Length: 500
Image (cartoon, rainbow, N blue to C red; front, side, top):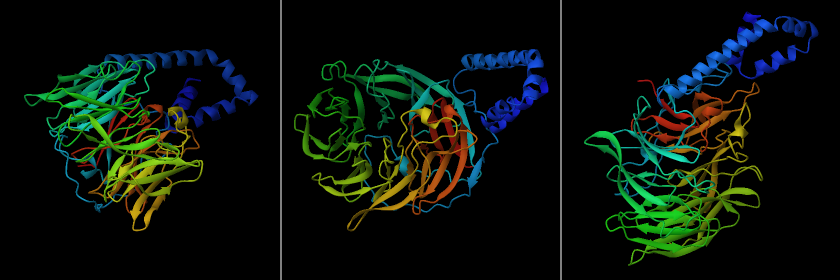
């Protein structure tokens, strides 16, 4: 009996939940069921031993510091390929050269080369049940991770090679039931992490001291006199003059002058759920009713210059594109679409529907291709439960481009990226998505998948995790300065890089 239980466990680890289903089905046969009952006492001893091993592993996970153990895989290690496709060759995406924001840490992630699929290697680090949903990388190369566990938030500096935290700073908790996720973050020109907190403050936190990783609060701006109790901060972003723009869920939009601490506020009267986008002259805010463009008035107070209503519901943050346009997604007549607006006056340049009626939705940020965007479908993804076992949520990734007479769908892929959207590497001409392969054996296998930006063809994919803990929970892939791709899963960090 011991050998049989061991064999079933090994098959379960190799092939996943389907093994347990088949084992249960065999118990329908009377002769097999009777034989199992006769040997149940031995089976109980085996089960008790197995439970002890699991408990010991759980205790080790609590005692061992975060990042020192890999993320535990779910059963199904042999149920699918570890790598599909073949390596890609770089073919850069052409885009207008936009002036860099002088008050952000140098370099846009989209301008970094990601992995090409050359014998890719996968490294993981287990942080318990802490999800690091927002990642940035400093100029020296360290990762800055904003991690969440329930309503608590922790800022971490992480070694990009080992994925182990080297410095941590607890942030004020979110209010219970807060409509904000508390995951807005950017690095300023001094490599400080600027982040809103659950108690309606904005912090500037240094990420190094005398060349070594270190977290310490340099500045605090208290917005409680301006943002009432019950409201919360959705986004912070710097403009080209150094002012910090912020938005609250209830529709308050304001600026902070870091030099003087002066705060200016305007009430849009419409709820905000997405990040603020900023160019050299203005800030763009998407509410639940319209897109707004605001500039800074003479007294530092935001001044709306136009308001452009859209039909349906917007699911994405504004993305600033070539030709003086800004793109969002909306849903009209139960059909997801990409809407391009002129930045100077807010008029709709064009709108292009994507995916089938009733089968498209997104809350993910659009990937910026300069003259167009890539949108990932996450219809039906309300929580990670929609992607357990071998199930998937809405399928599809599409590219929409501005053309001479409007806008058009350039290609549509059947890749499934149910909660992480897509990001672009312009130097490589690749789109990266945290994709899930449907599985009849009940295995949740997650792949970093590279899609050709020109054709929409899937070039390659590497399995980076299995099971519920490997789901992203709406974290996005981030391209590092060293050509690696990083992602915060529901239980830690993943790094994918070409073999060196």
